[in-house]
Amino acid sequence: MIREILRMGDARLLERAREVERFGTRELAALLADLRDTMEAADGAGLAAPQIGVPLRVVIFGVEANPRYPDAEPVPYTELVNPVLTPLGDEEEEGWEGCLSVPGLRGLVPRYRRLRYEGFDPAGRRLVREVEGFHARVVQHECDHLDGILYPQRIRDLREFGFTEVLFPDRDEEE
Image (cartoon, rainbow, N blue to C red; front, side):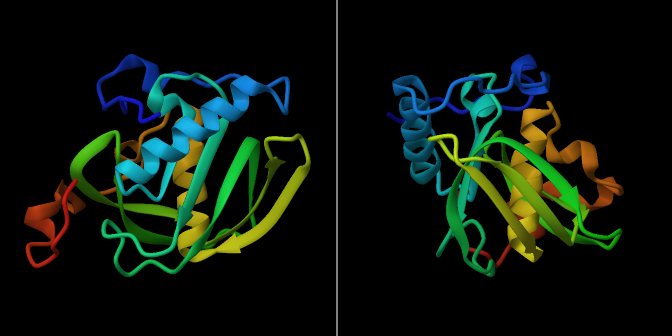
């Protein structure tokens, strides 16, 4: 089911989400199905449970060909529960980000270039990956939602934040 995506200004987006305590439940499966339906309907690269008003530490992400991120490398579709991120080094890179909870805007955001993420799949099996580049950026962005952080809070220079159609006038996309 496609759910309403909360937008910046909604206090629920600023709260820390709770850990999932039980895996393999009908409720978790329904949440993940709603997240996927909602993300796909909005052409998102990822979605966190708090963005649809569910304060649990659950994110999904994945990119093949996405009109919102035309130059992005593919990221495998992943359902990640109770994630923990560990940077692999201090190297950061800045990249343009948007967010379904901040529609129509983009900002230049610093993120760790390489990281390891750990957590669980919906059945409770351990999931560990080391990633870099856009994959690392997407994971960091989605996991920020679990701690009540929206990407504009990470922008270092607000001159690099604005409306997508103004920043990228030649790009044909909708948000």
